[in-house]
Amino acid sequence: MAKAGDVIENPITGERVTFLKTAGDTSGQLLQQDFIIQPQGFVVIPHIHPKQEERFKLLSGSLRMQVDGHEQTVHANEEIAVPASAAHAWWNDDDTEAHVIVEFRPALNSETLFGLARDGKADAQARPNPFQFAVIAQTFKEEALPAASKDRLLLGTLGPLLAFIGRLLGYKAVYPEYTQSPQNASVLAAPVQ
Image (tube, rainbow, N blue to C red; front, side):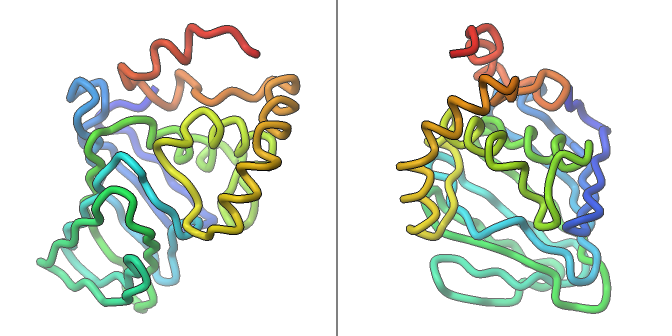
């Protein structure tokens, strides 16, 4: 279970994340992380958070960000807030590492994908296998979705079948070793369907 001070490194995306405040620390209101993004590091896919604001505060370096189709560079000592439902992606196209504090409000289940990547349960683009991804995506479709409409359509049509098969294969939406969000209690206790 993620707790303040835990560090997750993702060699695929070039990210090192230190949890500063977790869902358990803040009654689910905030997930705060300290990110170090290596040169050429990136977020997995352009995505949206239907019910979360994501805030970036650059401490050093710079990040390229695309928010709702508008691309910009965010520099040290600048902040950018990505409102709920805004399509966004970010990457470090500089030759120095970027240091950024990232906050999610509310926390929801944002810790799980980092844990899967840390444990080598992700592909070369840092995505879990299709069955694992479908189980997570179907369970938390109100929390995070791919930004591309074709990917959302694919998840909407094939997602339920892939998630059903994934659950039969033993994949879960929430792993207690990755998250301690109070919102997860019912998901953790729910029988596999």
